[in-house]
Amino acid sequence: MNSNPELAPIFVRVYSRVRNEKARKEQWKSNDPKWANFALVLDSETTIDIRQDLTFLWWRFCELKDGNYVCQQEGVVYNDHLDKESVARIRSYARKPADVEDGCPEEIQVNSRTEFANRHFWEAIRAGAAIVCFNSPFDLSRLAVRSRPAKLKNTGWSVTPWPEEADPFKPKPWIRIKPKDSRSAFINLVGGDSSLRVVYAGRFLDLSVLGWALRNQHMDLNGFLKSFGLKSKAKHEPTGLVTEAELKYGQLDTERTVELLNAMKHEYDGFPLELHPEQAMSAASITKAFLEEMRITKSLELAGNVATGTNTNYSANPVIGAVTGNSINAFFFGNSTDAAGTMGVEAPNIVAQGMGAATTYGRRTTDIMSLNLAGIPGGPPQALTQASSEAKGVLGSIGEGLSFGLSFVERTAVDAAFTGAEVINCAAPPSTP
Figure (cartoon, rainbow, N blue to C red):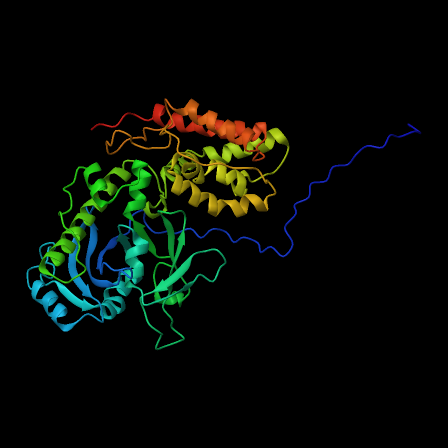
């Protein structure tokens, strides 16, 4: 027996938490189908002054049939405070037959804003329908009668189309709008009596955001219509008044929005993903969904932990998440406004981690995150192939130049993730136009 034992260091793994920090709940996962069985498509027309108050709003309630959303009911909504002459003009215009499927009500529904909110809008939410708009925050806020800052800190604001509740024990939910950047927002239902609705978080699909995810380019409605090979909007200069020309323009806009919804759906369905379309916030979201479908992300995390002898959840780290997640798309491949907005959202998390490194933003010309560059529906995404070396160089500069704390193993794991994305394009058979 050795009478002179040597002292050896003992390493103990400790999982620490910030004092008074609330434990994060498991993310709520929906069991709803990828595409909602119903869709309520909205398009609002407003005054042209600084307030941009609602004048009228066109809507179409559609049902998903054979892969397409087919209009079952059409209606127009007028502001509760609109003058009688304008309301009479709307009712006169609505005498023409509705553009609906055979066998559905042929009358165009005419309702006040309050009637629409209490009936069609509320029934659509309870039925689990997707509320579809082009620029959802604008249209939903035009419909709202009350607003307030969101109760959770730095989570945007909440609006509601319903006035004070007659029954305080059965309150309807609020619609929370949390800006992601200057052009998109996370939208969901909050509060209210959950027994009153089928889908707890609601389903809000902004086609301008889904278009950005599919094209990696911000465009107006006309731009996306052209990109998907559809007819353009009518040429019209809004007046903010209720005229036959304005009513016709708004009705056609809603028709085009439904057509764009179906065109985007056909292309999105070409990707073998379970990611709900309203969760596709960017091209990075779709790329990450591919990695998750191939079970690449967890494998890379496990490999990193084995190599380092740790048990680290890399994806939960806000700094690493900013570098390897959706935010990288806005930091390095979006325009300056988007990048600045994303930096504003992510900066508090980075500072909280004690990084304190100088960061920059600006536009990169290499379009590495864009999917389906040729605009051909279906098939694997045409991304991260020839430009992948450029992507790796950018990520390398992030780890070294910005000192975001990525170790060699972590950077290697990220590099392997991009390589895995290349496998998607190489392994899958090419799509047929």
